[in-house]
Length: 334
Image (cartoon, rainbow, N blue to C red; front, side, top):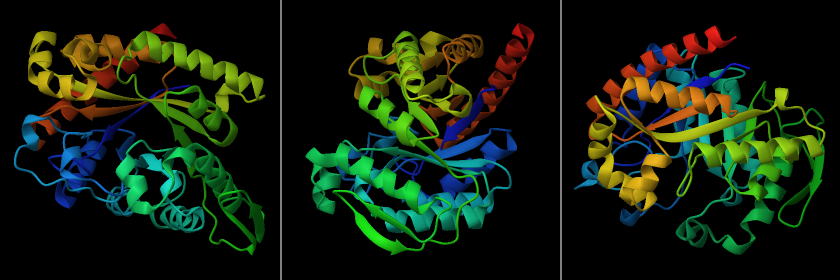
């Protein structure tokens, strides 16, 4: 299976604006990336501003904690772009009524075209989200299982449909139109997330995360493969995805220096940040990307650590060239 490559857009963080999201999406498509991605939260206070997926700690100074809602942003992107796939990672599933979300997913699919939308679900980790929405955070895993089961029923071929679970239930529901090729994934590094993905999902998406590395990601992929095998599922019909912070510079030292404050903010130390990210010059990042492919990553989403939109665009251009190098190297390996 080939690996596809995507870019996380600034729907939150210091560059969060409609103009920047659409500009970055258009640039990603022009450069040949396979997908663009946004993420999802509901209540996003000023203390969360540095929890960005595109930007830097330095760039956050004086900015408001804007957060463009994920599903409506996906619709806007899908309508503006011509071929690029649109992903949401991760949609906080316990916060959403699956009946309404199912209608939104099907409608988005109709508006942007078939086989373009991926919704990667997570259970959520921000307490304020749950408090504001009145959802018990200590039950989020069970609610997520109930809701993704409900979505599978809503988006399935049988209509009308009944569904019953402790969190949501209905009878004689008809949900049309039906989508054409929407991919439902699950995000999260835990074994519980992987089991949820293997049970309900078309794919799994995770980052190396705090304390993570290429080696720990590879170990997680092997654990997932064992879970899929236990459930009788083929790896050939299941996508393994990687989302990873990235900084490209003339050298690894320059990339680390540029990203230092952001690495400490996100990972606790520069050393842990170095292990869990792609940092360095083009040659080093190409080597690391090839290594992630070899341990099983078949979808890679880059989250650029950058101080301005101009710098983000420059990194996107360089990454597009790096990706071509990796593809060439993989072709040579057969």
